Length: 206
Image (cartoon, rainbow, N blue to C red; front, side, top):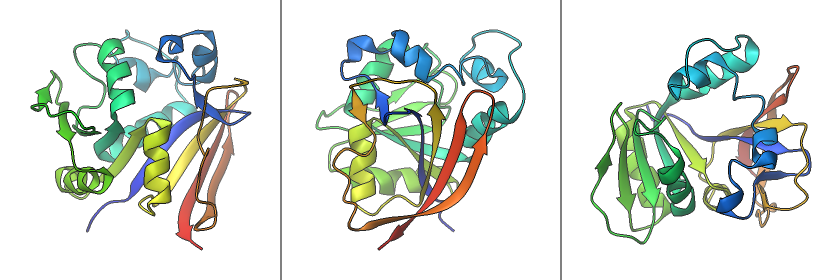
């Protein structure tokens, strides 16, 4: 049985998930948005940031998201930003399918992450990711434009948002351009922690 297709993001209170410019990634606003995840023990261990870290419900959610994922899909913009920022051992440890027009051979990294470059659209990338996931879930990793394409294509089963106490004012909105006429949401979870509020929704056709 095929797993679910989902995305999981941090979002500011005014609806943004990233700054507009790649140069602002890892800047002050970005750090405020991600402040809940950076000290978590599982996150630190996965990125080889050192021992220790916080444990609790936030940490459990980070670990659960990682463990359910059998493969990931991302857009070219996210890949290009990550290619510069990720360590040699990229943090996915699964196959990753990059939606792009660039023709490129698969790029294997230490630790089990291999990037595959898909030139024929989001559905082809998802089909390959499902096969590679082996029955586990497929995560649409980002960025915002790629997530939106999958939402508007009716290809997302569920998603989660870590609503962070930060304001951006401008940047990339998660649902800018969503086809709201066809997308209905069913609440699954609303769970506050001291740092963020975790929201989860199942996606239904209207």
